[in-house]
Image 1 (cartoon, rainbow, N blue to C red):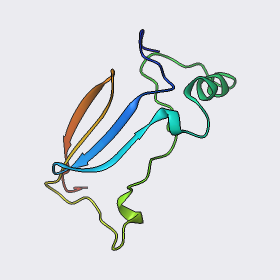
Image 2: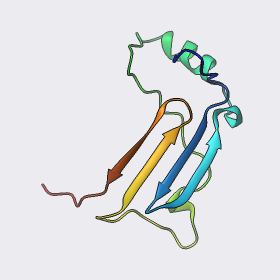
Image 3: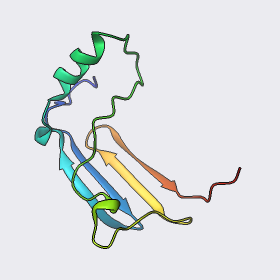
Image 4: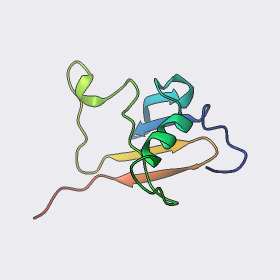
Length: 95
């Protein structure tokens, strides 16, 4: 874990085209980060850079009424306090 960051209180966000869709904290998770890492470590070796997917906070597009989905050209920004941010542009799938 990153030194100086409390994994039990990391603020998370996600924006689509500049509109905030999700905001939450790891403090609201059903199982805390140390417990998840301990559990995953029981059956696999965790290495720097590994990702443990835990689900998603409220605001998922498919759960909206009507549902909202990403489209080519959309810009998705996401981040976690103390860990950084990223920005991605959605492109159409080509086989």
